[in-house]
Image 1 (tube, rainbow, N blue to C red):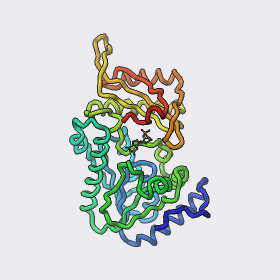
Image 2: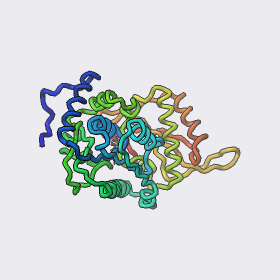
Image 3: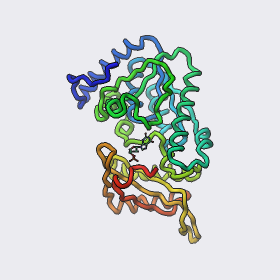
Image 4: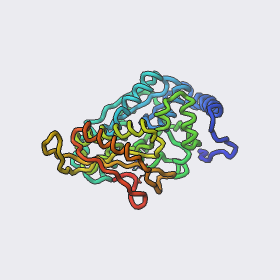
Length: 324
Ligand code: XMP
């Protein structure tokens, strides 16, 4: 299989160039799959969303999308996938709510790498189970992009939960495999996907699982999800959503506070906002104090269980971007 981007391939920087690329790919995909069915794991991330939109345009209901909600998604994410793909684009979408399955398996597991392993392996199991229920699937679509090929020799980012069962012997459909991320975004917008979906910040495959530090509990996960939603909302409102990655982590210890004149024990919400080019090193975004005050006020008043907000000012190195 040819995995080198043709030297003659023009950079896709405009809607017009994206339109030409889409037309070419639609024709190619139709020629490749004929009247057969194609399966896609749709996480709702940029790459899988753009592949889904492209394939829906090319082959409509011959594409079967499986969205697994592992219970570690950010607030509103699975709902957005259902709204955009299930309703607006009328895709053939299978939605699997695996929240209980994941949280039961993760209960009491504090080691970050064990958590990642459980999350990744369970995804493969669920995807396999769903594939087994379907008949006549001949192709597997993947949101592989060119950096995946360069960095991990053709395997979709090695630590991505979207990693698929190796034993699935289906021919691959990878229409974005020669594109860089910025090109994928231009193509996504030309396909009519919402701007916020196409330009969203990177989100790790294990999701909030590696931001609910230590052993995950449902109450702390719920607090993290709410605090993270407030952070994102305030970044949007205050023109800060150009920051490369911004999120909340919630550690598994409490400190003392006061609420309504009474002692109130709660977890701290740790805010992190970093800029980077390649995620190998990162610098800290300087957030205006007024915005930090507003975020602190909202998180400590609106989120059950959180009584402090702290800001992580550590660059990478010495800190990694995620806390675990
Ligand atoms: P670190 O924490 O290593 O993060 O500085 C660098 C980038 O990688 C993301 N990250 C992950 N992405 N699965 C993923 O798909 C993971 O297990 C994982 N761990 C870290 C992180 O969000 C940052 O963008």
